[in-house]
Length: 451
Ligand code: HEC
Image (cartoon, rainbow, N blue to C red; front, top):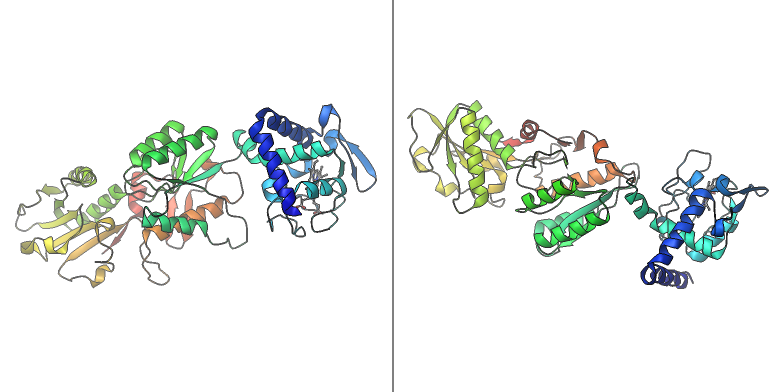
């Protein structure tokens, strides 16, 4: 029976919203008028009974005065006022604040509860909730309004949408893991709701930008969580700058652009390089040799960055294959390509310090620095603390990103998010935390060096 009604409702919604857009807006407008002002069809004031005997009219009993602007209810009085957005009412086993109702509402049971106060679980609602005298079309328009309210409110600039951006399944193993982890974020300790993420899956980065732009044109009150676009960061950053959209926890190898709408970024390679150079210098290594890959754009860009940083810190940069300039000086070598221990300059083995951002290490080859060849002195930079303090276990990047994103979703909860009101620090384990908008220095301080 329920299903029949749902199908009917779906059908009528389909007809309302797809065949005649004007009708759909009319219904939503009428629903809104009832909801906000207590004014029904043809401008009549709606009637209702409170406490079984007091008859009230119009604005005095408009739904908004109890269920709130966004229909999400609240708990200011003795009785908790439930969330009556249609997305919530029509849910099976809904997470509604009042415990009793078990079955989802449909058009028929909704009209029953609004007219008589009897819920789908046959419970009688508290008499505070008025019993309304509403016609069928008014009931339907209320449903239309309560169904549209999330969207309407977002265009009213009160509600944010969280979009995710991942390649379609099967294209990238890391992205697939990230996706499944985000779908299974652990429950919060106090059982409070976790914000929903609306995931966009793309074929190519071009496709991603098209999909994203389409969504942004519908609702600019959006933030993007964990966009996964390695190699496309710059095009993406440009689009975000143009639309003034916040990006939270970008999954990226480069530092985030120096812009205010990048939130909780992990330190990128530039920060990792800076931290490696500083630690080498602190140990008296004043000469730097850089191993880069001429055909690789990322590697080339990073070596330019590294040379500038080295000069700024008074280090002498020497060419890839050349001998060290001063026989006594200690040399550090920076790896900006796949690290390969066989390639190490045999002559200087032992007195060279190798500086390697973790991304250039084959994770199967080396995980625990301390187990490596003791002759090879090696500093490895991670964009986060790679070993859990509690159990010493290795933390893979995708796990760290997913945990941070889940933490973010639980932090935001059901509240409407305003990116400027997020806390300064996102901490989700004792030793894992990120700053809201870190400076380059702060990012570098976040880098962990495994010595
Ligand atoms: C005077 C305050 C007040 C007004 C006005 C009001 N409600 Fe309610 N409503 C409540 C309270 C309180 C409850 C929960 C009662 C309970 O749990 O026993 C409730 C419950 C409901 C429920 C049941 C939800 C569920 O999860 O079972 C629906 C549906 C509902 N209201 C719809 C409306 C609509 C539609 C309007 C406007 C036409 C409206 N209410 C106006 C206070 C109000």
